[in-house]
Amino acid sequence: MKRDTYKKIVAASSIETGDLVLIQYWMNDSFSEDIGFLQAEIAAAGATPVMVVQNLSISQLINENATEHTYSDKFFKLYEDADVIIDLMERPVGVLTKPLDPEKMGLLGGYMGRLFQTCASKKKMLQLRVPTEVMASKEGLAPEDYKARMEAAMDIDYNSLRQKCEELKSANSRFSGVTIKTGDNYSLEISFGDRSWDIDAGDGDIPCGEINIAPMENQTNGEIFFEKIYLPDPENPRARHDFDKVVLSIKDGVITSSNNDELNALIEKFGPENVTVCELGFGMNPGVTSLCGCAVLDEKMIGTFHLGIGDNTMFGGTNEADFHNDLIGHGEFIWKE
Image 1: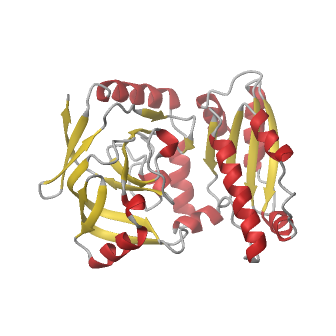
Image 2: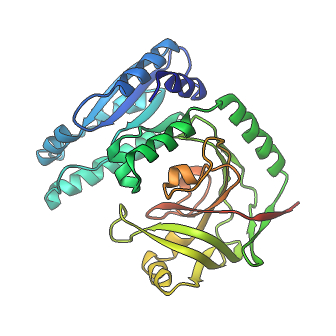
């Protein structure tokens, strides 16, 4: 990506003079100019960049030979001391070149779990995706298409985006819930309780651009229509299923059925915690103008809403689940005071 794009991202991230910025570089097998551009702009902002290299081939060797002492408390202290953590992803996080034996896989799982929890505890954490061929393949998109979409979503006016997100948050904060009208007069009622709206305008997920809230987990009821939805496979989260013209029935916050037999079987396999409505969000990114099946882009598309299912413990909810998945749609909204 262009260096100027990284300058915009660093400015939007609220990195401050004197911050220690730990970059976790999920690279393939060669360094790119992107890691250089990012560190240069962090330095230009008066902060100190420090890099933990997660090279694909080297990570494979390390984890094939890891013991229970490899990732000690001292290793995680590096992350605890950082003011800001950035995941720069040129490949999917945690994926290796080939499977490990069960014992080593268990150690890797423990390491990744603790790493996630340690990073998530930071007030400032960014996940920044680089439009590489590997990342495009993960999303099932042609590299040129993926690159164009990602760059358009990141090369934006972040100050304008934040202002518009703040305005919508202020407008929505006086409401206790909403009824969403979709499709052929389908209606879904959602209650917010005392939950608050969050803004993602450059200091979290990159590409960014949404406001969202964790609704009360047992207070979503009715039916909702989506032109298309994508869901992970319960046995292989890196695989996905897609369904067209879907109607979901939701009772007490849990998806109970749909108008598609194959989807109903999938819902049953997921279990109730994974099909609990956990988020309502609105896409705000002016650089995302069409859906493509890549969730990190689609949920930010301007003019759309997304209904999240699964885990919401990261942003004010109480539902613990195996994953978080967003369903993107268009609708009309009747707000409740």
